[in-house]
Image (cartoon, rainbow, N blue to C red; front, side):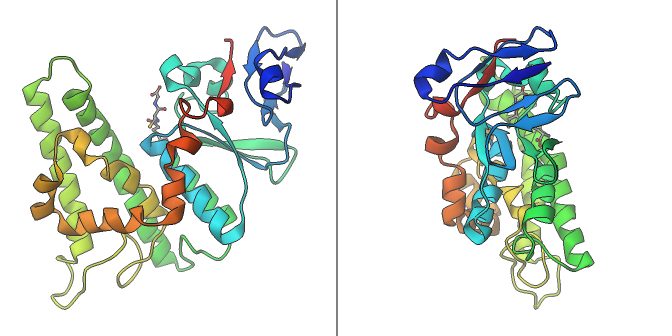
Length: 292
Ligand SMILES: N[C@@H](CCC(=O)N[C@@H](CS)C(=O)NCC(=O)O)C(=O)O
């Protein structure tokens, strides 16, 4: 199958027809000009100048990659094309998307910098690691030393195993018509434990009595802002979805709240979570959609 996109203005795009080569029935309706296509060998090919293509939506897992790309842009001028995926209509469960990520979830990163066809990277923490290793040559958001690189990995993995707990908790607390008290309490307790691990780490309480609090999750001394923070922050700042108020959090997690604010203040972070740039309702021109 080869799918070609030809239109190049918003009006034409909505009405664009797709040419098929190879006979597989797959109808795409493209809503924007910057895009990619898959050929018969499952190579992902691009029709625009960007080596990096991000398939995302403005959710915590999407935001962390959006933030890193915005940070890389500020340091290196990195550029990419953004494609928004409508999760409400399950675009991410369609066969074209599953060829890029069998897990059927955003975010997905495509990179064609090495060859004409691209590789695709799934799983948000793996995408952060890929981008940091390949697009942050001065290790501004990572480290050269093995021990500090390992710290980054430890906190990326710590949060990757914790994120689903927060996600399931949000479902049972805010996402069900009739809340189940046992489930709500179970997940709140689990998340308080996870937040307390982050709080203890940031406060320095497990280190020598003379140790100062940390500013960031990974790195020696007070730490350095890295992909470990980016991979954790978009979720943790959403603690309210677990039914906690700032007043509930402040006495138990003062260092964690300060860490949230510290990261929130970064211009690239603000751009990386900007609904005007990354939310499909506000930016329907970036939606990519297939008819099946
Ligand atoms: N472990 C995955 C989780 C990705 C994930 O859960 N993405 C959500 C949005 S935050 C999604 O695509 N949800 C739609 C669905 O599950 O169909 C990652 O870290 O990338």
